[in-house]
Amino acid sequence: MTCLLLTGSRGLIGNSLAEYLYQQAIPFKPFDLRFPLGHPGEGDVLDKVALKKAMEGCTGVIHLAGTSRVILGQKDPALCLAHNVEGTTNIIEALLESPYKPWLIYASSREVYGQQETLPVCEDAVLNPMNVYAHSKVAAEKKVLEARQSGISTAILRFSNVFGSPFDYPDRVIPAFCRAALSAESLRGEGGDNVFDFTFVDDVARGIAKVVDVLMTNPQNLPPIHFTTGRGISLSEAARTIVRMTNSSSHIKEADPRSFDVGQFYGDPSRAKSLLGWSSHFSFEEALGKFLPNLKEHLQEEQFALKRVAS
Image (cartoon, one colour):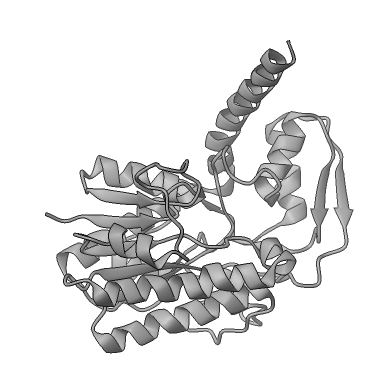
């Protein structure tokens, strides 16, 4: 019986992917340090004993856990490197100890490309990490590639500015812009001319599910694949679009870009199309059309809960 291990199952992408796995009736074990203590899915990738136990009976691993934001890597480099490099090393060690030799999907990031001269960026571009988080992802990717020499089938997937859940970090740029617009507060963007490839979380989860299908059918080593729209949108344009779609009276304030951020990125989605038949179903505006009502309802529930506590 096929069973997968999904690390980072309570994260932005993990939550959405879990729904796809449920829909396809693929059994999986959740694994995330954000579960309450004592929950069967509670676990940290830095805990080798917990990992080994969670890996029992699994024929594949989708590894989404780890530090997932550039700013968190800058604030705590040691923890970022531990989560992303040591945690991935622990995953691989548990894979190698398993009698099933499970295949591995590793969640990486467009940050590994750094600032590229040629856009859209393809997966074969030379890696040029610019910050702690990016360096941790490059190092983890290297570990994943090395695991192939021991007979582990792996796939490296690179994501770009994924958004679309009301439970995401509230200060991540798109959720922060949307929250501010819905509350008629100012939208503050650091580097208005910075260009990114904003990708809807449901599209990314669907892409991962396609890779799962491939590896379940025929375990193999895949080339790096990123799930991107191929469209670059500046922070200023994103802010204006959100203000317009929410009919908000919010003002847009631009601040200087952060020194550790990539200035421009959008990715070529052709490899995902040719290998998996995947392309993004949702434009930025269409994704916002799904996200904003959910976020608005979530904010109303937050306000209601606060009022109940206050009373």
